[in-house]
Length: 210
Image 1 (cartoon, helix red, strand yellow):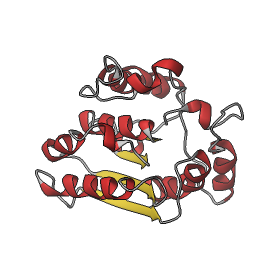
Image 2 (cartoon, one colour; image 1 turned 90 degrees about the vertical axis):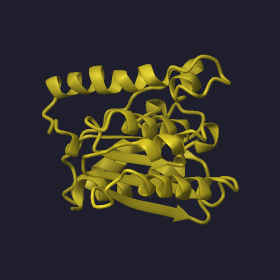
Image 3 (spheres, rainbow, N blue to C red; image 1 turned 180 degrees about the vertical axis):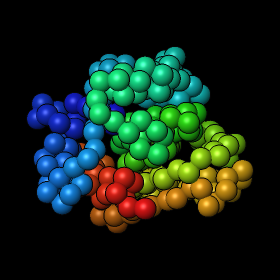
Image 4 (cartoon, rainbow, N blue to C red; image 1 turned 45 degrees about the horizontal axis):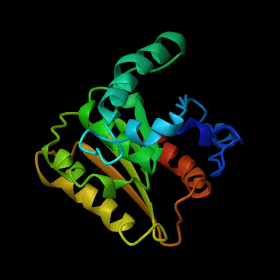
């Protein structure tokens, strides 16, 4: 998960997902067999790090290098040091806002690594080309994608998420291999409190439901 500063600690000025507390509650329901890798963002380089290559308005993009780091360096390290199920069916990538955008992109270019995506309120407005990535995306693997959007996140958030789903379903994808769960909260806002509430629902659907 992206934006580690906002997931597990109380030092974020923007709020907190309280992932540790939510995992504890999930464990009480028998859903504790999951490891969350929280990656701190790069502070002043966060937007560049989370931008796909075609986004250059903030300076040269670091998104491709970052996605490759998660796939080629971080995941092997986690698998070597923790008791994981290392196959792609048990490996996901996710985040919110810009973190959601880079997670979509990472899932597109490394489908052999990430079999699940948890995408909350992605900043799709920054990169219209992400839809072309989706259309051209060849995915021979079983993939689960959880998409969340709030109705109070601006007029384009819900339509953009729906457009992404439609693009993924249109060309080159076998519908039997891509499974979606779209969660739309008409009153949802763009903040950590809402994403934290959505987190257990997404984890349950992605990892604990066939």
